[in-house]
Amino acid sequence: MSRRHEPHPGHRSVSGGLARASVFGVSDGLVSNVSLILGFAGSGVDNSVVRLAGLAGAVAGAISMAAGEWVSVTSQNDLIRRELDVERRELEHNTEHETQELAEIYESHGIEPERAAAAAADVMRNSEIALNVHAREELGVAPDELPSAAAAAGLSFVCFVFGALLPLVPFYLSSGLTAAITALTIGVIAAAFVGGIVARFAERPIWFGVARQVAIVLVACGVTYAIGEIAGVKLS
Image 1: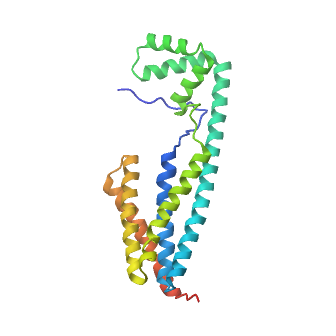
Image 2 (image 1 turned 60 degrees about the horizontal axis):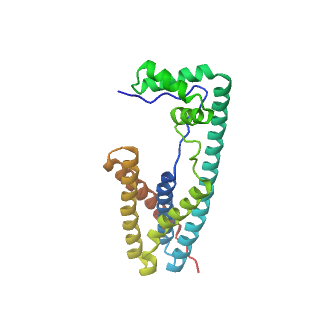
Image 3 (image 1 turned 180 degrees about the horizontal axis):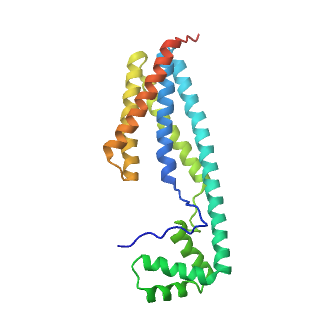
């Protein structure tokens, strides 16, 4: 059975993708805003105040999420470029060792030693191809396929707003306890859906992902609603 070659000791593990930005954008928007909305609803304020708080929370949270994602992806890309520079220098100044390392990688995939050595030598004849192959095998990235920080930030913004606005809809259609219960129901259903997707990505049991995400929403909403009721804030 083949196994993935372990990264070079001089490298750190680097990975990422837009799927993470979208899933966690929806999840964060849902959890944070349904909690905020129910906190205000629990205080007994007018529907207009709940709607304003929900909209403000959606926009502020989306901006924060997008900014954080932009910084995260930019930093990740900087790290990858640094690691590629390290690998490029290794290929230039330690060619024999890198050729042997590549041959060992091929052997770990089940290729016979002689054929692995020949394939490694052939790859190493072209510096750009060699860098590309080593980057994929050792770092798990493609040098010419780095994620876009702007795309990740934009996707995070849109997904956060989507998740944040879902529980706000009932407060445009009804009010009071009815709207609060409906918002919580929407939040739980959406949380279950997101939890299932996350579990699928992580190859964990679907029930575990659903239960965990729903529990997070219920606890967060319970705490904020209780705080709202205790505070009893009245805005005129």
